Image 1: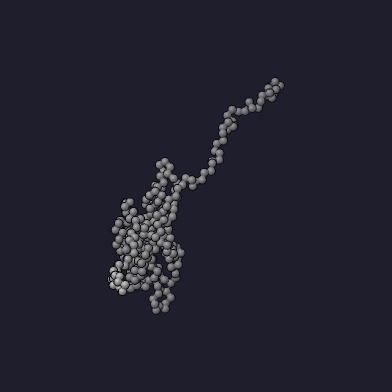
Image 2: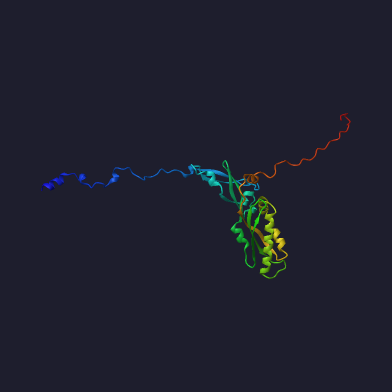
Length: 274
């Protein structure tokens, strides 16, 4: 009886086991973090294309601001951007060409780009492939005079002769090999006769495909010949002077030609004035 009275008199708070419910005394841990806009930690850099293209500023790129040892410019170097040639040269006829440019150096908020590769859009390539004709493809690794190694891919298609009645125009394997050899020789010569800048200018002009068509016409008539893809496999050691040559204008504006001045002969008039 005594123990039952004692048990009732003791408050329930005193008979709780020690060590339980520890979190009552502590503040809430892992509460909601304050929402911070991630773009406040970012900064924008302009992409500057080489001077061989009509449009110098071709876009912008974003990166986290420099924090401690993580420098923003180091994260930008080596980035690859893919731009349509139609946008770079303001020419919609070249919209099927895609140009890859690599960030080589950062000056202020400008990223200086250099040529990294070229490709053809899928829809253009699919529009060329048809039935009842042969596809001719070749590739070659060539070295330019300034030390770049580029891999070039060429594609062409056989075509009917002018007075042909037969529906198909398939080429035999021996003729395919001969045309492929012509392609390889032409592409290797194109890359080997100048530096990378000269090669890019020739690729933009797009006259190499027509040259291959003329050379291969004696073997088998071909059409739609294109350098469909170019990859820069190996680059020489980075040189700022060489990069600035890509970004300096080739020719300065010296003005238009002016006709030479013509000396007028003065004749004595009736008024007595010379």
